[in-house]
Image (tube, rainbow, N blue to C red; front, side):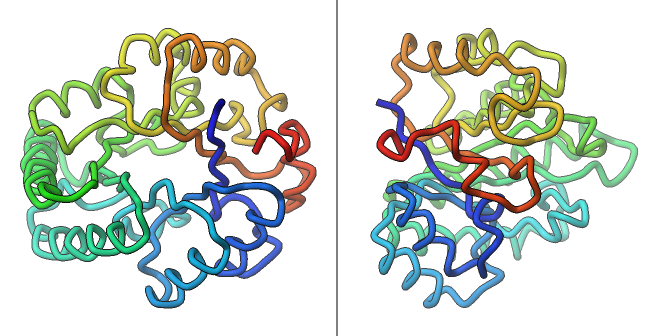
Amino acid sequence: MTRWSAHLHMLFKEQPFLERFQAAADRGFSVVECWSPFEVELDEFEAAVSAAGVQLAGFNLHSGDMPGGDRGFLNLPGERHDVLANAEDAIALAGRTGTRNINALAGNQNGGDRAAELYEVVRRLGELGERAEGSDVTFLVEPLNNLDSPRYLINTPDEAAEVIGRVGHPRVAMLFDAFQVARMGLDPVEQLERHLPLVRHIQIADAPGRHQPGTGEVDYDAFFAALERLGYEGAVGLEYTPADGDDTDAALAWLPEAER
């Protein structure tokens, strides 16, 4: 049975962030996820997770101003110290909350030498993998489409797989977002079949609008059937915005509460 994870930076925005954990639990979710938790007090964040009784499937390293266009800093040598310090804090937080996946966004291309910036990404991911040794944490590489994130360094699962292969560390794997894949004009089912051994977490949204399944062009019946057929055992994050403003309940109507 699929484990669905409510994304708390995309859903339940009718409520303050720290109240969304309980809101998700009240609607039948036992698993949740979010972007960076480092914008709030961590003791309050941990208390919200604990009080709601939910499992935290994953979160992001500090990635900057995401709504403003930032997409992480692994590619910037000058950010190395801050990235690694944040990673240490993230691993500690993951240990306290029972979280296994930390998304490490690669960054937006900052100059003209993409190869040099990817080299820095590979180096940084290797260092993150080393810091995760002895923990249950895996750092994830997420490809983002170049329509919505035009400067982002890694756009397809093939490119993410190449980076992960260059890193060569068992604590570095892939976050597979079917929305991002579809926005690149690729078939999410075919791409999942190709890359499943590297995938540790999956996210979904319909394309092109990034709303709930059934509002766009992605064949989610086929995608969900592929998850079952391929034996995927991780969580599936609902990383979408409600099609009708901030009406989360309407955006969850496709998924019966008993199945959440």
